[in-house]
Amino acid sequence: MAELSQILKQATGVLAARGEGAQLFDEQGRRYLDFTAGIGVTSTGHCHPRVVEAAQRQVATLIHGQYTTVMHRPLLTLVERLGEVLPAGLDRVFFANSGSEAVEAALRLARQATGRPNVIVFHGGFHGRTVAAASMTTSGTRFRSGFAPLMAGVHVAPFPDPTHFGWPVEQATDFALAQLDYVLQTLSAPADTAAFVVEPVLGEGGYVPANERFFAGLRERADAHGILLVVDEVQTGFGRTGRFWGGEHFDARPDILVTAKGLASGFPLSGIAASSALMEKAWPGSQGGTYGANAVACAAAVATLDVIEDEQLVRNADERGAQLREALRTIADKYDVITDVRGLGLMIGVEFRDAAGKPDGATAVAVAQEAARRGLLLLTCGAWGQVVRFIPALVVSADEVDEAAGIWSDAVGAVL
View 1: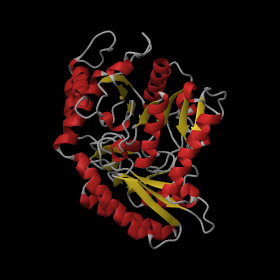
View 2: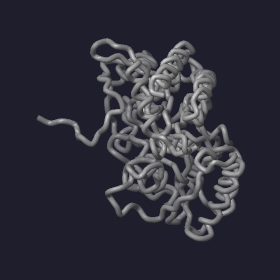
View 3: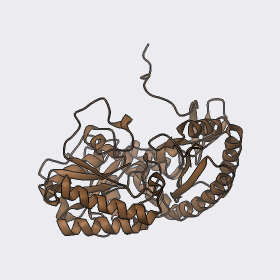
View 4: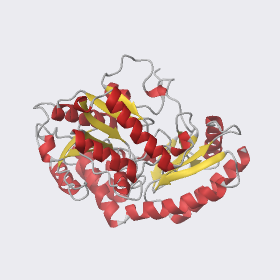
């Protein structure tokens, strides 16, 4: 009898039977508030009727039309609709299946377009688990250990994380930009550097937002040296941060944008976007794949865009995120071990540190597990697992936010 790999570790013991909006139900019918959203994937909630209807309709007509063999209407419609929401100047799109694949596609394009071998990533970033993407990931050793050698040509500069450094954000930003210049001077000469690859908000790295001055510094250096700015919006995109793209908070102006997760409300779909002038520098045959732009996933993505627009979910993410942050900060004020509540929109992290100021992953996990027992599903992140993250679907209601905050308060009180 076969079983799942024993290396897979479950964050909760829930056996989900069905989902609706921001709620999951197990096989006994117990209801849970799902503030994990499949790690930020179910952007329109579980089984949104319009997404379900679009997928069901597409399944009955064409499940898969491999898009370098034939075209299909959901693909063409999705490309057209993405043109309405992508940052200015990004008018060409390539589709894949996962975030890791999209990151690697962005890397390939950057290297081919510039003829340069190196990339600079930022400490705490998560870009995926495949070899190249893992080589660019520095949010935790578990994503990259045990299968060396990793891809060469990756250099790491600091991310402006004020909590990690214990500095004001201005000082952390000064340090990050100065160290980036040092990397360009000592490790990867500008003429060897194809791209900067960065998340607007660190995901697995602890839900730490960047800032406008940091992105201005990246853009200035990129423009000065012919380096491409690749913005990884896998977790921050599609309304998660209260803007359609997380980089909008900081005037990021990417040369290449990477998207996945919430793009298709749970169906596997990812992509990169760039300008026509940049995309045409990709080498012939360098873009492709069997399942990318699957017809059912594309139909679900079009429906996702419709729902986000019609139900004003970007605005809801902003408003419900403000409501949730305020509630979480009120709770945090009662406990010395909760040292920070941060984030943008519905991408919020609560950080735990012990009496000595060290990251306290054990307490974060204990509180998250207690919350799950009480009906609220959460995940942890951060290098030490010290941050509990709140990422409900963008359809979450004010009442559900209040309910989640109440459960969280009770769980924290029970553990601490």
